[in-house]
Image (cartoon, rainbow over all chains, first blue to last red; front, side, top):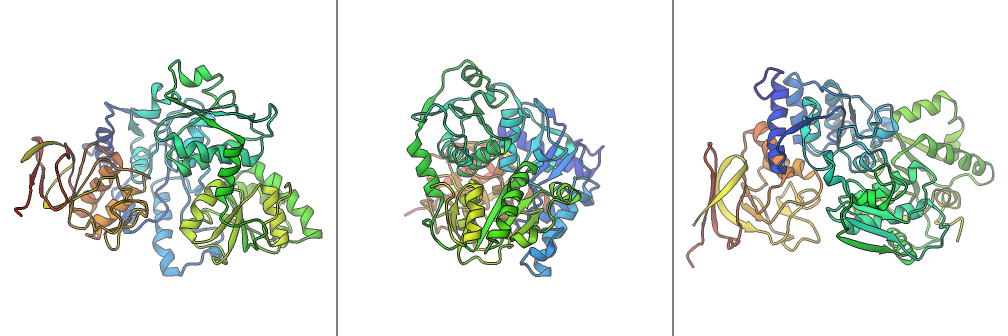
Amino acid sequence: MLNGEHGEATAFAMQILVSFARAVGAPSLLDVTAAHIDGCLYHGQVSLDFVERLVAGGGHVRVPTTLNVGAIDLIHPELIRMTKPEQAPARRLMKAHEELGCVPSFTCAPYQTQFRPVFGQQIAWGESNAIVFANSVIGARTNRYGDFIDLCCALTGRAPAWGLHLDEPRRGSVIFRLTGFPPSVEPTDSLFVAVGLLVGASAGERIPVIDGLPPARSEDQLKALGAAAASTGSVAMFHAVGITPEAPTLADALGGTPPEATVEIRPADVVRALEELSTVPDGTPITAVCLGTPHFSREEWDRVLPLLASRSASAPARVPIYVNTGRDTLRSLEHEGRLEGSQRNGLVIVTDTCTYLTPVLERLDGTVMTNSGKWAHYAPGNLGVQVAFGDLEDCIASAAAGRVVRVKP
Amino acid sequence: MTRPARRYAPGEASGPALVLSYPLSFWGGLDVESGRIIDHAHPDRGAFVTGTVLVMPAGRGSSSSASVLAESIRRRTGPIAIVLSVADPILTVGALVASSLYGAQCPIVVCSIDGIATGDRVEVHATGDGPATVVVATPAV
């Protein structure tokens, strides 16, 4: 491939991949059978120049390759508050990736599509929440790939043989133990977010093993945990003892080696982590609710739609409720007629992008409520808004009240 | 004083050193329009990397740092070379992409960075098949 027998673009990608492998100390390359590309979000002219070079060189992906979010909602372009000239390079970047043979999935949750990998599968994925989900919840194998290099893996079907592709580096080395909780601690959404925030903040480069977590009510809770851990830190994989596939027991998670350290997570730590996520007190007026970071799953829709329907008669939403979701998930909801009348409930559906990355929100001068630890972590810096964090039920109740309220005190 | 180095991205450069005591994440840490360090938590916030041989212990942070380094090289607001204590795959990719796309080389080498001070004149030689070298000259006072 290096010498151009598979075309100029493949040789270009292979040159970069080989140099990258050398920099990480990988002795060889291995085959990957899927890729997920984080490069369709516009970072500047270089983003586009790189992909155009591959398109011009006849590049085509060699493995099934999904795309992460871009800067434009191609299905609801009227939502994007950018001028046409501002949108042009961002749109072209998304289109150019399609020309390389990538699937136009434009979702940060490729594990919620038909391209979900399987246990043990070697893949090259970008996007921090997707990486941690694939490794931890599914047991597929990827390192933290990203800009340029994920596409080089997709064009060559190869990745450096190092890190989380191998057995040894997947072993946990630091224990996070839930301590002082009642024996039947309730598996609330907030608990999983808080644990994710705390683990991310102190795991560093180590693989965390979470011990004492109650069984998750849904995969979405593990998705939220991983997304939070990959926001406050650079966690690429976690084990949850008795929950995730490579950690049936603590000993399995540690792989027979003693942990470097044990960190206790107490109820007070959970309360503090959640309090620190909100930048305003309860009762503060809100300008919007943002859900779906990472993209809302079908199961999350099945939870929120009845909540919205039961509210709409008695107390319609006073502020818009933005929900980011994958275009495939939206199609299936529309196909089943599940969204009829939902606009009257204040619902604004966003696909292909995310409300913390690109100008979608009508107002940036107030407080936005979210059920996402990731959104709450990044939005104040990215958008300049104030944030209130709460469970899904709190968010819907707050949309009706027009201010931050809690369903359960 | 000549130091042996390992080459990760090729090129030749000569300029004043900017020595950072703490690794810089280019994403969120460097303003590509001005070349200034904008990370609020970084001890060298406010310093300009433009035209310097950037010397730091390691790289840090998000893979988007590859794009930010490449974009800064394209805009000629970035460093002219990077000298690290340990290899960094993300910065290596950023420099290689910029070199391939724009022919603008920002050599990246790994060597001992002990005793290099901001303002020292540093030459980075990292072309050809032989080993790379870093030459450090302390300016006469």
